[in-house]
Amino acid sequence: MNKHFLFVEANTTGTGMLAMKKARELGFTPVFFTEKPERYHGLNELECHIVVTDTNSQAELTDSVAQVSKEGREIAGIMSTSDYYLESVAKLARKFGWTSNSLEAIEVCRNKAIFREKLQRHQVSQPTFLAISSMEELLEARSSISLPCVVKPADDSGSNNVRLCFSWDEVEHMAAEILAIKYNARGQETARTVLLEQYVEGPEFSVETFSWQGQCFIIGITQKRLTGYPFFVEAGHIFPAPLSVEEKQEIERTVERALAAVKYQFGAAHTEVKWTSAGCVVIEVNARLAGGMIPELVRRSTGIDLLLQQIRCAAGLAPELSQTIEEQRYAGIHFLVAESQGTFSGIHGMDTVCNLPGIAEVAIHAKIGQNVQPPQNFSHRLGYVIVEGKQYSETAELIQQVKDGLRVQVGQRLESGV
Image (cartoon, rainbow, N blue to C red; front, side, top):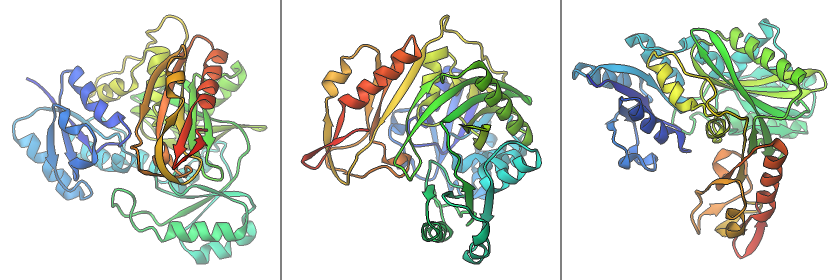
């Protein structure tokens, strides 16, 4: 009997629609629960059963899932590729008996303030922090806050409203802005909590892991490049990162301790860290696959298809995580962003870049005439170029050539694509 696999909403940057194709590859019929089917580009071309329901109401969503179950369909499992629905999925998995992390583990990862407290109790290296839920609390804590500091919402996603603040005025302004946000991008109530963190100097990496029945497997470490300062927007990545054996081991051990602290049991996790003069410092654990096309870089480098494994895991099947590419390869991505505000009028230099050896994939999401601006979060990225190489140096050089060779055109002026 053909089993069905359930998806609750999705991210909007490609992985979500791809996940449903992967479910089909595994022999499942995908069922997609969404409030707004029109939000997803390419959904109509997929062979999947779409259920329109209020995905922000746990009661309605539960009823809709129960209805699909009642119709005689055998259900293998459930997942979401969107941060905003991880808790809903954990509740449904618990109710219907599907494989999932505990709701408690997901809640800790989703609320960065609770996460910080958990890591503190387990003595995992992290920035000093303070969580506040009112301007009064902020004013009371003024003397204990050292600048510059990072100000961020406790429970958002995709670098939304994350900012490095250099003055008390900036801290107050950003905190007031975050506290005033009652609903997130998906219309869900926010925690109305601000996290203030010590700014940690050092290169940023992410650790891609996969857990099965509490055992953590390290897939690899990604080197990250940020843009949009004082905002924190990922401008590009290279996988795997160039690290010494000692650095790699310390980063891996620290991340394993962080995942153990939050009792992470199943599936992919994407942990952001910084390498400092004092060693590895944990920034956050995302209880999901990495965004920013990192799973695609992992696939090109190792042959491991993390999205496929995530679906297997949610269906209660043990993951297959052995590398299938014989020799180590490197893969990198460069995101295109505008350097000034205006209307998008094209990308200059695309023909030259497309002819470079090692270019694996080019995608432009921006439409001619749309408004663009310097990046403040992931949604301001306009497209990307993926490259491949046999060596790290070759891959990094190719990324630099792409960066230098492309110009995002804004209005009538040529603007840099870096």
